[in-house]
Image (cartoon, rainbow, N blue to C red; front, top):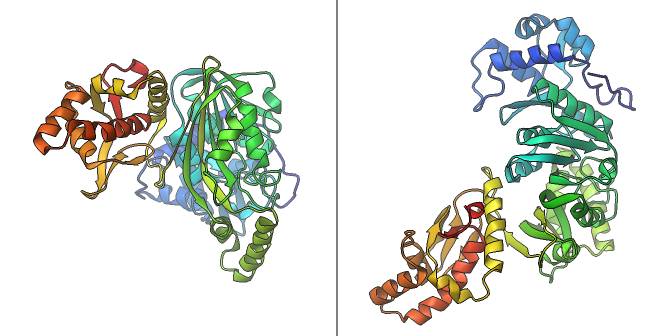
Length: 474
């Protein structure tokens, strides 16, 4: 592994100069103490030493380090730049995170203000990783790879991954992490956005790009280099040209909308000419003061004066640029050049706690199915089966909700809930409605109108499926 130097002496450390043999042994050391296992349970001095060094950023005695890293030579690890001496103690220059059976090295947050800083795996990276559609494909693009988490995960189901970043330290850390985890199908390319892959098309694009809408531009890992959300919208317009027909792109985004505007409208307008089908998940919208609190709180720490100064500066900028609301979310696009394209959106206000890739394949297949139905009444003859369907709310206003993946919710009628609870994969919707009509005394026509609207919505949200659906929808 080559050593990549920061342009700012005394700031971010050089990427460790460790060869394949050293990295293989280092991974064996991590594995031997269970560093990559969840939940974390300290069960040895070696694990405690590694945790103090690479998770907490604390120092240890040289003797403790020497013993814990055996058979690796401690002096070699110091010379490589992975560890350093501080007084008479040893510290780690990088943090190490466990994620999905892999180990990732990245920068500690104390170097966040350096332009070459490489972010660790945080909530955004975790969200994108759980959202990603994972099926075997030929070529994936990780746009803005950072420490390489999306690249390494995609390498498990791709013939090849191309990882790009404007920051050479990010690319070096991605290569280092790939070698550390014995992954060898990732190619790194330096450059801004799509410049390094001009003319190529991909089966999958994943992108955790700078999307924070602020007056600051100094933190290149999070702040766009264009005013407002202009850079993010530009990327969304560019992405379709880099997708193969049938290829997917999944991107985390923030965008601006007016207070009295349908929140998804700016995104709909941006992608409407891109020959893509779109599923947009909006995780709510925030007023400027709420957005400021979210992004400035951790920077200021206990310095309330600095926080107030920054808050006033950001508020003035939002007011000057007439920014009323900022939406947060993720967009999944599929390139499709034949036939009219569709746009779907839904709001989800809960954390994504498990994998949602299969769910999103189902959502796209379900919407394709719905667009092929000219008359909603045709659904009456269909037999439906529940998939990840659960219920919440009270008796007067029941709610259907997805039990896994993105937790979509939809208000439904009381009659719809009663009928949906009877879905058994054998009786048509019309037959179930008639049965419920006889039991409840409600007119079948009255039940039918609400039922069809609710069924269509639950099909859209992937909570029920027709029994005659193609394998792709299941």
